[in-house]
Amino acid sequence: MIEVTHLTKRYGKHTAVDDISFTVEDGCIYGLLGPNGAGKSTTMNILTGYLSATDGTVKIDGHDIVEEPAAAKACIGYLPEQPPLYQDMTVTEYLLFVAELKGVRKKAERRTAVEKVCARAGLQGMEPRLIRNLSKGYRQRVGIAAALLGSPKVIILDEPTVGLDPAQMIEIRSLIHDLGKTHTVILSSHILSEVQTVCDRVLIIAKGKLIAQGTPEELAGKLAAKGTISATAQGGREAVLAAAAKVPGLSDLRVTAEKGGEVSFTAVSEAGTDLRGALSLALAKANCPVLTLSAESMSLEDVFLQLTEHPEEKEEA
Ligand SMILES: Nc1ncnc2c1ncn2[C@@H]1O[C@H](COP(=O)(O)OP(=O)(O)OP(=O)(O)O)[C@@H](O)[C@H]1O
Image 1 (cartoon, protein in one colour):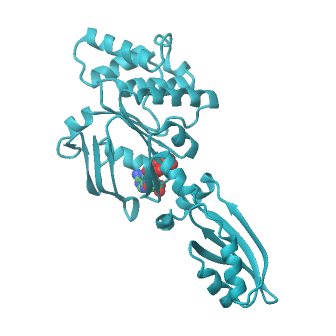
Image 2 (cartoon, rainbow, N blue to C red; image 1 turned 90 degrees about the vertical axis):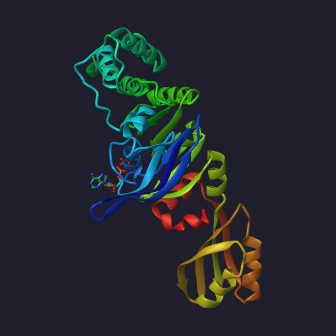
Image 3 (cartoon, protein in one colour; image 1 turned 45 degrees about the horizontal axis):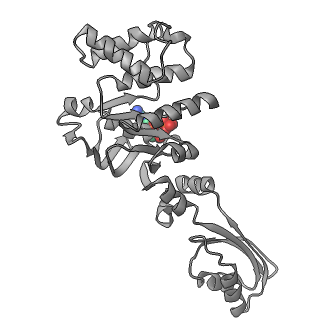
């Protein structure tokens, strides 16, 4: 449904999106996950044709967003991070206006379309209310209803739950889940648990780069596979590190303290393996008696933070 190839966006010297490629399949909910400033909004603004890319291509249902903008945009309904809602209009007035902008010609058709999207977005009973008097949750629903007008195949939602209270978040997530039954949905979020619960597939973006993608289960497997080992051994720094480096599956050795012939260090172990025994043996063989040794597994949240703070470590993920 969507093909993004080598997408790059530079603002002056700053590269906000850095050579990203991915494919979006029909009928799935995709989550663009990354910390603030990762490049999510920029990517979405390019997908929806609001921004031009510095390099790369975007095809929506076979239509290039630059060469055939009208055909490509007709496939997309977009809820920007700050939806342009007219506060002094009622819900119905605003949605009729958007329907007209989207080219629904006949008045009766606009009415029917607005009734339909109001029902779909859970806005029944809110139609005569002024937008300015709605809660943030209901304003998001109006934005989503507006995105649904024109029957687009793809719905793109930029941080749809940001600023909502927990109850509203749950309601909007359930609405998105429901939309996923009839549309291809792409949403952005900086909340790991949100994309894990709502999305079928996740793309993790950090510092403009795509650092991991897969189903939430695949990513949880990859991300949570790591553990950290902390140890202190007697001996010289070089002998201790050389012995530890020989243990297969142990990486990222870091010395944390060194004094009086004792070296403390941490290391990362892969794929849910417990490498304490192997490390202890390797150090003993190198004549470096082990004084302390402990292992901890990193939470998914920890690994996500580590990955997005140090995207260069993506290969290890
Ligand atoms: N118009 C602009 N001019 C210059 N730099 C920009 C512009 N828009 C965004 N940036 C920068 O590009 C980077 C990516 O921004 P973007 O808004 O796409 O990130 P994001 O992941 O959506 O974050 P947030 O959730 O905070 O919106 C950031 O460093 C941001 O400061």
